Image (cartoon, rainbow, N blue to C red; front, side, top):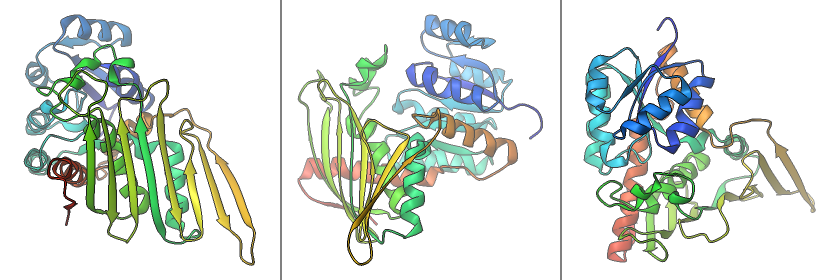
Amino acid sequence: MEGKLRVAIIGVGQIAKVGHIPGFRKAGAEITAACDVSPESAKQVCETFGIPRAHTDWKEMLDTGGFDAVSICTPSVHHCTMAVESARRGYHVLVEKPMATSLEECDRMIGAAREHRVILMISHNQRFIPAHRKAREIISSGTLGAPLLVQTAFGHGGPEKWSPTGQWYFDPQQAKLGVMADLGYHKLDLVQWLLGQDITGVSAFMGTFQKDTPLEDTAAGILTFSGGAIGTIVASWAYAADWENSVTVRCANGVVMIPEHDPFTVVVRRDLPGGGKEEVTHRIVSEDSSGWFGSTGAFAEAVRKGLPSPVTGEEGKKVMAVLLGAYDSASTGKVHRLG
């Protein structure tokens, strides 16, 4: 495409304000419209960021046009309908995770994007965190040998602690699924991407300990992978006085560790031939602590240059299959097999 990329935002909550809007700005895109069910929120965000048009009806905004792409930052129950309707009107689509609430919805989104020849990207922003990208580079080089065990955790005190409108995460009518779909989804994608292996089995356990919701606020699981590795995952909104966003990959000849509070550091330890050990700390210079700059930037570049989606709908569906398998396992008490 020629000229500046124009983007419209659907849903102006905290993720839009701290992630998508600044990310598109940094990528050189122009945000021409924003929509929210709250007139006050839509107006405030448009005034704060200098966005020309505020809407409360997303379909009306789509019909009015004046943009090339849509960024969907709403509760997940709306993702499918909004993505499909956007694609039908010829808009490229970036949609927040989780991609949808069912595999059937994923198929509808993928089909609409394919039929109308638009880019559909799922916002797997943790792939773009600098430390994660460096870790993948190290693991895929093979210098540490085959990955054997991955351990990952993502936890904090709950969405209401960082988002003024975070209570919707506890509402089954809007979120449908709990912390495994919120935080665990990130890690289910990340570990597959880091290892270059698909998850083939999941055994999960879930509970609600602190939040006033029928949805789970804490989940843990054991994973098996197509390349023979195994792993563990923890996702929680019940971390008191703490938060964690960590991953450790133990390979045949060494270990790759990302400290729990540092998105710019990767620690590598390996055995040396003939005995002894070596530790190397990689520090990355970046301002993209959450990966949103990288995610929105990659989407913007793909639209401008006509490149493939940086994170396809098929990749999002693959994560959804594992996620739903985790809920099935927690419900039945059995291992859920995939593939």
